[in-house]
Length: 80
Image (cartoon, rainbow, N blue to C red):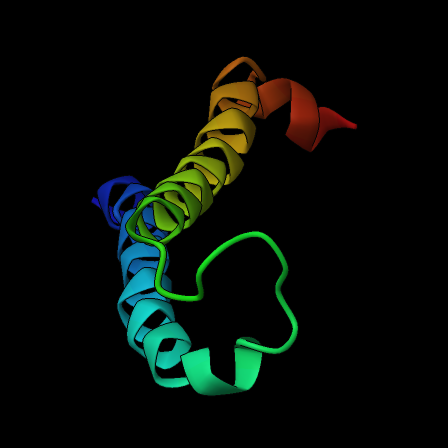
């Protein structure tokens, strides 16, 4: 049961980060307007691509170590 809870942790953390970050970024667009060049501060494509990319990275960060851990025999690790 503990394995299921730990597997469900990274999507919730990634979603919470996106849920907090997108409104904060929208709120700070006036401050960012002078810092960016060649793109609007409220560009819809940017507000779509960046959260999707961050969720994909969070997914890989949760999945890859878990996949590696499943390939190790617990008895071998404890014997070392």
